[in-house]
Image 1 (cartoon, rainbow, N blue to C red):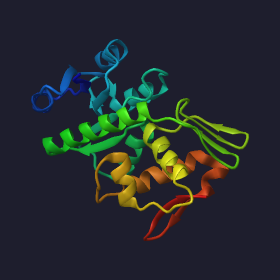
Image 2: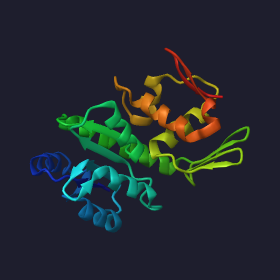
Image 3: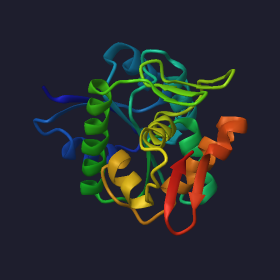
Length: 224
């Protein structure tokens, strides 16, 4: 069955290019041109993936992404952010809002297709996989999308932050390289700071448990 995709983009040339690229048999794409229309489609269509521009006529795509992550039924939906902003602080804002990936305009349309396929594949794996992970007083529950660190419940992780933590705990105390994490969680290997940004955001949300996510310079990351 074709995957349903929602594109929220107000620039018609970009929207037309993306629609043409993703309107093959494997995808069914719906287009919204602003936040309000995008939210209506999110609630009614429940798409399997969202491609979201940041600068929209009636608001910020980041706010729409945050709203999506706060919705119990929509929260697991993969989100790709499209923007011309390429500074590290802009990427951090995108990931903190809940984006799974951040594509900088102009981008190659084939790269977008690869990311769409990778995120949909990961989402399908997540649906099939399950199992609560325990490491002493640290519990990761993928069904509830919830982390328990001692007496502290942590339920504000983005999808990718949660997936990253889950993989680290699942393979603890093994050290996982940056390339291995990118390949497993993003479906590709990138030469950018995607992992570093997610590790930083993850630690900020783990509180005292942040020290259990260790960095081995030049080697990788592990959970202890």
